[in-house]
Image (cartoon, rainbow, N blue to C red; front, side, top):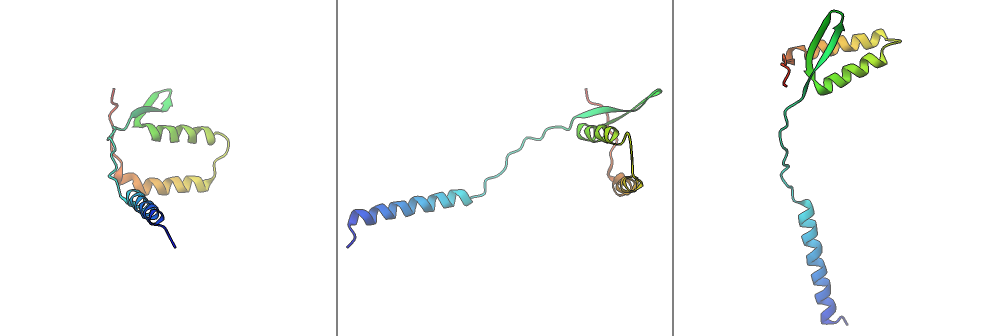
Length: 99
């Protein structure tokens, strides 16, 4: 035979479990602050000095590509870059350097 206090204890435990499940499954709205994207100048050539204004992440990618491709470069990589440019060229925007 179960005691009344055992039944109450189990009921309270089940209520707490239900509350925890409910709070864990609720979707909370994400709050994100909109930060402006940082622009930088990337040197295309140093002599004569030719620069392009690009986003910071793009600058990092180009710098890494310049570093990794100093020795060997495959024709397949060039074909992939040309395809990427052809697919995304219409979405590109002209940037101005923000100081």
